[in-house]
Image (cartoon, rainbow, N blue to C red; front, side):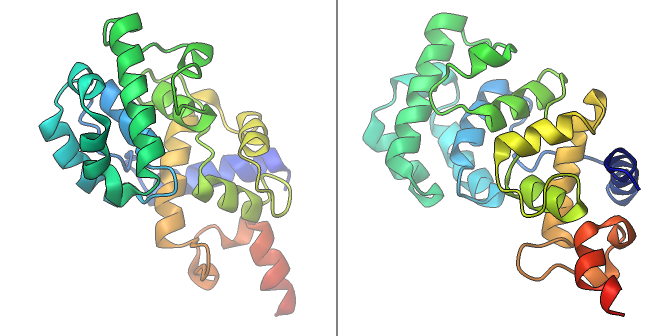
Length: 218
């Protein structure tokens, strides 16, 4: 089975397993919130970001309010997300840029998004995919780990950029965003980092790691 064939089969099976491809971050269809939440999710679980942002967005209900908020006040709220000083500075600066340069309307251009403080390709692709439906591979830890295990990227690949580049060539543009959301759900339920449920995995027969570690030993 070629990588292209394996990718097509993986997309189809994940669609069957998870009919609804939902973003784990509860951004309430407000683009600026996803911008903030994407930054807070670095080295933090989406579940914790959702909890923290309920308070954050209650206190600061607009990007302008967050842009004008004192850094110590932002830091106090987002502290549970970790790296709170750096993240607070990033989200305040990003909101300030959004308000002053774009009249609070999030731009869709990749190069422009990358000029926002704290925004790298992962967050930019998340925004382009979920807000603007432009596709894009969100190469987070789940995506990187599982893509390598399935044999869609090089064995034990850890580079977000290389993972994104490889998957862009394998996954149709219109399916990229949903594929990444499903990969997150799959990574939490079945293909976990430490103890993947390989023996009961619905993708086991097309998984390169399963073939190496289990099937060939039977």
